Image (tube, rainbow, N blue to C red; front, side, top):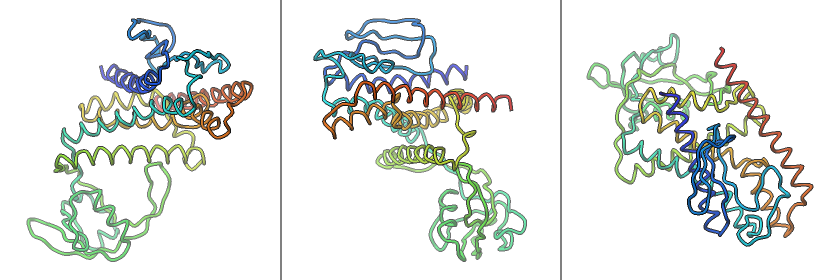
Length: 350
């Protein structure tokens, strides 16, 4: 059942990505021949708004086939008024951007649903204290509640960690222990740690772990929209940085995941409840939006690059160049997909 949920979530995100392209194309008068969820053999279809809406056998992607656009053969164009290639370059750019934009918008509404459903955060309650650490030397103990640092109140574990990392000097901790408040001085130590990309970094630490105590975050109506916006931006920046680090080699290629990882993570999340599904669906939606903006000719970002070139030079790239770059783009894309699949299989077999 969890795997079915994950496939439905993936299909849902792909549907809205393609719906973005479809809506923008129709707005500019482009005839959309096929709207497909999935690739390969057609399982079912129906006609609506003069478009064939199709479900295909392989539910790991989708596409909108517009008149005058053919990713397999860029030279296959049409000069009719309702063709994609007869539209102005800026109109084509908007059509191409509409897909990733739809993914960012879906992520925003998913985060908004999480906000209205109730956001929880880790409380600043100490779990374990590492031997010989700064916290141990200072006298911090298990189950101490950190109330304030340098007279500034602390309400979440994340907030506490940020205060420590941005003030690597003597800190005044106010803690609650057994119902009583007391002040303790702690001097963080610069130590090795791992960031979210698995890189080894140096940062101020005091040597404590969380007790895993959660509390509901109080937010008013406006703050819930702020939360959704901030989470969407944070997820986008995180994925952009992850892609950048993969390209520069700061993150090893073995960390790249494929569709199996996406399905597995979503399936695991479904066992933890719908809020977890919403969270990972939002993250995957942002992922789809960001990755489709990469300047690879087989993706939206590659087509945007061609149209921007035409806008600047007032000349479209030659058919020979388009064909060569498209073939190269498909080669890069298939290579990345194969690498992701290889890594997924390696993870599954341990």
